[in-house]
Length: 288
Image (cartoon, rainbow, N blue to C red):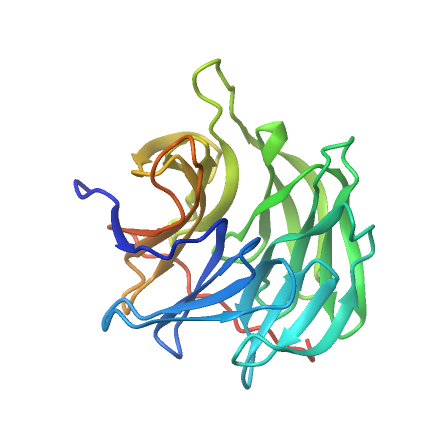
């Protein structure tokens, strides 16, 4: 794989995040968290649309029928096709003044998993949650910044990163019940005085390899299923936030980025052709 990441959309996001390939619509959906916008991009036609959202929007995914599920500051919501609130599925169980939903992923059965962010970084008061027809259930606590949610190809391993701690974890996951158990370290990143790249959002390919965006690291890192680093892929923007596989053959790796006034480029959407396709996502099912 000799190609490099290239800018395909100058989305001008303050904090671009949560890219999801919506196969049925043939578009990439992503958000600008603090810019409070919901974006849709068709890489074939180049068509780009965005809608204002009422609150900070940490994560999003297409829902069955129409619209989206989204993790907002106030909780987890169903949104319509234009990003307007339709119905709150669960309130933020933490203090929304200091904590908001940050990273999410639909599980193999259509439930929504989403984690929160402890904005003051005051000691790990954030958590990881599962949202389904039964309500909200906590899967893990003691977190500073929830990120990196992704599933193994068989759905039985759940990956998760706590960004400021430079750690990627994994859980044993039961797709039938939504239970996550046996949290353990999958990989650690050792920061240096000149490299503060830390694990942000992530995606998994059909080989079971985990691709992690390294925030303030200007690259995407690929790990094998045992947590061994395979390769780094440079991105011409310092703050890479989350990758997503997409395109008709799922062989394009998209990555969102965040602006940094001191670091030059950022806030755009980048893409890289890859050899191993990614996993197709599941639509959120409010009745799961």
